[in-house]
Image 1 (tube, rainbow, N blue to C red):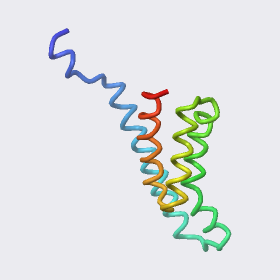
Image 2 (cartoon, rainbow, N blue to C red):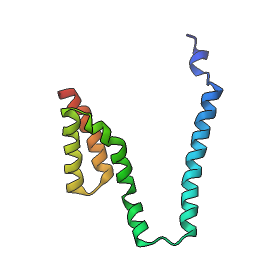
Image 3 (tube, helix red, strand yellow):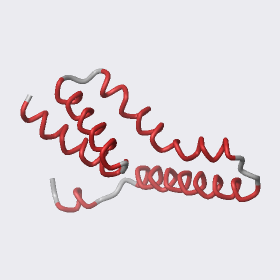
Amino acid sequence: MSSDDVLSLDPVVVGVVLAMALVTVLTKVGGLWLLSHIEVSERIESGLSVLPGAIVIAILGPELASGGPAEWSAGAVVVLVMWRTGNILLALCAGVGSVVLFRGIF
């Protein structure tokens, strides 16, 4: 394989990546635009405030459910860090680090 092959970009792949980036930006901008034009009730605001955690659970829940001792132990670390600090980003970072560590141990 020559160095030209390694550095070449498939135009279809570039187009797909750019299209996905555009859709992501439009979704975020559209959501912000919509929320700026409607009155947000306390109930909607409460729902929006827990949405990031719900998305994380929806993505990671199946992995945890089908996981083994390493995943369950890392899940316990996440719960402990979240309970002690209240910081979801710190808890997720601790979970990622601990699942890597526990997979090496178990």
